[in-house]
Length: 334
Image 1 (tube, rainbow, N blue to C red):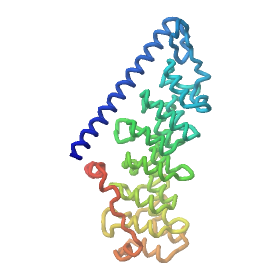
Image 2 (image 1 turned 30 degrees about the vertical axis):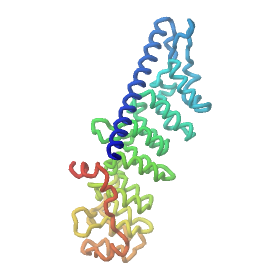
Image 3 (image 1 turned 45 degrees about the vertical axis):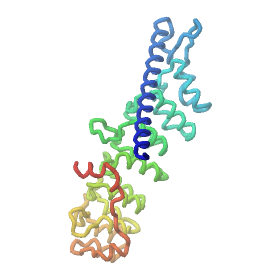
Image 4 (image 1 turned 90 degrees about the vertical axis):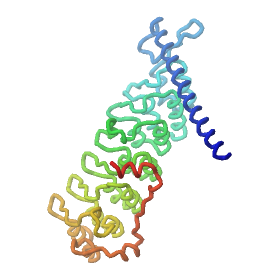
């Protein structure tokens, strides 16, 4: 019986969601139709929207009712703005649509409520404003909750290759979040969960999420990225540096180097012979930029085979954190 109840509950929830979407679409069409009628009846075209009310024109001041002004009062004002004939796709004087402004607002609790209010009116989740989509603004200025709301509402993540979600610098939302200071681990996890393939995408300068994780000196993030299939460990940045080379700069990240060289003897492990634009390999980085640590120099010697007992003793066992997630098998088939 419990299986039957779960089945019924699942379909009831799906039907309720479809009904909500249809009702929202009907409300939106009604508002836009009434606004068009108001324009033809004499409302100013420069107004955001207008709706006849008791025989009078109820004009909306587009300069006073931008989201920046709404955020200073209550999120309810945003719903009132749209119900009064305001367009959910309205751009402010700087050219930013309401959804872009809401995901990038500073006041997080009010920001989340405004995003929810806008999503109920089904604005375009992939509208480009100044070369950026809402998910790019959320990655650059928002938080994990704003990105989660957009992703669950159905915005593109980059998985659909016909819709690009990289910004003007060629960065995916995942890499954008990793470049923010301080690093927001929760935001990183939300974006990686919805599109793990972004872990394989470099920006216009060749910087990859793996490079950035090593710059952050965060072993857990490195381990997580290496769990994503087909991550290129030998990808080079604009200076020809690989992840293994970056791990040797400054205080050597010994465990990270072991992760990159795991599993021993496999074609997946990072190359110790690859050279940068100056002809330096990872071993030379360790000798000249990493303090000349003898253990690191031996580890990065191409003739040295990393012993399994060393990996076990240092707890270098990446495993497969995403083995229970559906997209794992799809990525392996790509």
